Length: 275
Ligand SMILES: C[S@@+](CC[C@H](N)C(=O)[O-])C[C@H]1O[C@@H](n2cnc3c(N)ncnc32)[C@H](O)[C@@H]1O
Image (tube, rainbow, N blue to C red):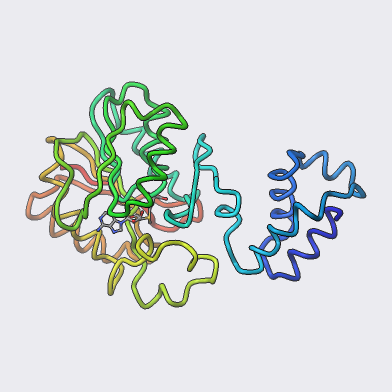
């Protein structure tokens, strides 16, 4: 099968970006670079190896789950249907965390999934002493554990299975970071077939999408050191509700201040608050 034939097949299946996917598939299977593929357009690649991937794409399995890995910040991470596929917009939260962390200390990544946020911080910052990676899902924690070992970050990680709507992991943290589920339950049903292959537990944030965020905002101060930071990712249309909640919490002196950061698409995306 040539590169062009593969693009055509992916287009027939209805994938969103057939030419980009064709490159990713050929790179994954044969190690070819984009330049090599474009230089030798008539080259024929083994259909035997490509067909099983096309079969799974036909069933709307995301490419990331087929490959079993994906990329976030500087890390190549294992992913499986037990964890959310890391998204580029989440990098905004990581950049801000790296900017705010002054040196040393302990951090908790709550709702860690693949571990992408916590492990990226640890990987960039050898000075961080401990990172708690916490999730309610044992399947997600198995992937986070594997990723921590793969990048030799496990000696600074503590893996904790916990429902963060009930309590925080034990200890005191200089920073808590989280990308919790924040899609309203009714909207989860309308997501694309591909996104629906991701765990519902990673997507569904309750009636208005803010159930876990509200719990986090209420419980996190008990686990934060004085002046500690809490960074939470939220949905593109949730800033108004988040600001209402935060204005009340700042008035009650639960937090001293907060601000909102935008993502790569200029949508409000990350809440940064300080105890
Ligand atoms: C949106 S995913 C984020 C995963 C990862 N941090 C990322 O950015 O790709 C949310 C994660 O929260 C976990 N989760 C859902 N409800 C939870 C709860 N009550 N307590 C702890 N973790 C929870 C899910 O299992 C899922 O791994």
